[in-house]
Length: 207
Image: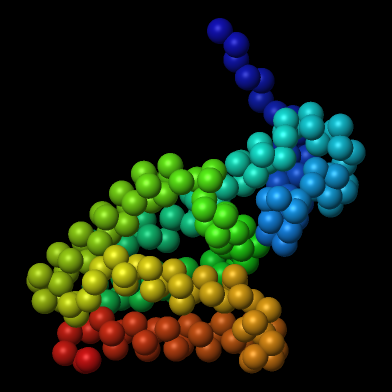
């Protein structure tokens, strides 16, 4: 049996450099527009050295998407059935908004893949992602039956949260062009707005 040897510190560092460089290139150029030469240059490596770690542009892209999906799904996993329903959903909104602040390139990479028809992750969308959304939609509907949250379509609620939070990463140029914020102050105001918006929408008897 072949046992894969652990990577050296240099190998780990080079892989991380390649993935970080590729994230920047893919998020700005898309999969089709990105080239191995661009990625190697951004990573500070030669193209042959890059190909020692990843066999192709597709392999790099697939690795990035795999890591991204884990990060992207984590905030939804954290919806706690034992918590206050409104607090839990608003907390999810704020976690997603924080991801737009912390991981804008990852969000744009994911958006680009979806716009292209999700050819490399459609199985994960129709499998684990759909199962997770169904699970959390069932939880939201349970809270509704208990009268702890307003009656609202659970799946479209989740879609709306994705839209209102990821917008700040995916359309950053548009947002900044209109608001002309200093630094990320617009994200602080977005957090205040979205907290009020979703609390009013979700609290029974407030609409």
